[in-house]
Length: 141
Image (cartoon, rainbow, N blue to C red):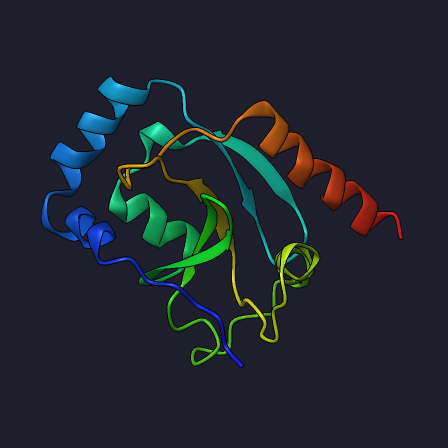
């Protein structure tokens, strides 16, 4: 069973990427998030500086939105498995720790969060720490 949620409102990024990103910068300011690579390295970055092209560069192709829980999701490569990208075991295990998930995520990912209007929102420090705690637990087990 494959559980992937796609939200049509995200396609606005494809229509007005520069204006949309500029709007997010002005509205949200500092939007920290986490990038997790297939080699299990990770880093915290300021997401407000990203354009659609930046997202595509991070994931290595077309961007797909995968819901994890509540308003937290990841952006990953839409064709990651088809292209034979390496399995990202760290993010796959993170998703399995949050909900039933019988699939794998391939390629590098970036965390994202949406507000009640469907706009990108900054991850809270608690949400960032939750991910970091899982990473440390996973890497030290």
